[in-house]
Image (cartoon, rainbow, N blue to C red):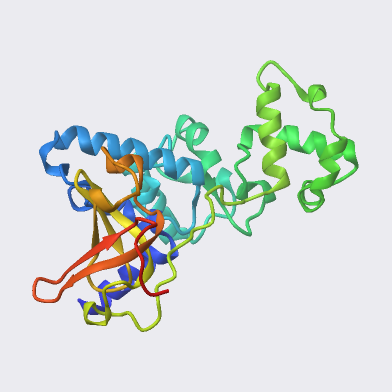
Length: 290
C-alpha cells in the first residue's frame, strides 16, 4: 500500500488534473460545510467545473485514463472505456480520424470531442493542437497561399502575419474562429494553464518540533474556512491563520483575503507540541526571525 500511495502522490505532482478526476467528490475536502450541502448538487457542480477544466486544457488521447476521457465534451463513460479498450488492442492512435474505428463512436461524438483530444507525434501535425479536424482545410488553404506545408506553417508562425483572415471567412467559419485557429498555430499544443508555482519551504523545517515562535516562513493555503485559513508550511500538519491574523485590517470573510493555492508569508505565533497545533499570522506588523 505504501508503494501505491507513493505512486499516487507522484502522479498528482506530474499531472494533478488527471489524478484529481479519479477522486470521489466527498473526499476532496473543499471546505468546512462540504457535507452539509446537497451531495447530488455538489457532485453536479464539481463535475461541471472539472469538465470545463479538462476541455480548456485538452487531453492526450494515447495516455488519458478512462476517468479523464469521460469528462471530455461529447464523451461518456462508455465511450471513454471503448477508447481505452481500442487503444489497448491496437496500440496508440496515429490520427484523430482513427477514432471513428472505435466501437459505438459516432459522428456526433467525433464532432464534439475531437478538438479536445491531442495526439503527439502522430500522422497529422494539427492533431496535437486545438484546431478541430473540420478546420484542417482552412489551415491547408492558408499554408498553400503562403507557399508552405502545414508542418512549415507551424514551424514558422511569424508568416501568419501575412494572412488576411477575411479571405477565409465562409458561412460556417467566421472571423472569431479564424482568429482562434491562428492563435493556436502560433503556439501549437501549448498548455493554456499558468505555470504552476509552489511555496519554497524553509530548509531544516520538517516537523513541528523544528518550529520556533517568531519564525517567518513561506507556505501555501490549503483550505479556507469561516474562522481562518490553513497553510502548509512544509511539516506534517497545516498551521492555522485565524481570521483575526489574516490581515492588518478587520476581515469579515476570509475568502476575500486568501484562496486555496495562494502562496503566503506567515509568522509562527505559537506551537502546541502536545496537540500538534501551529498558530500563524499573516499580519505585516508581526515581527520575528528572517
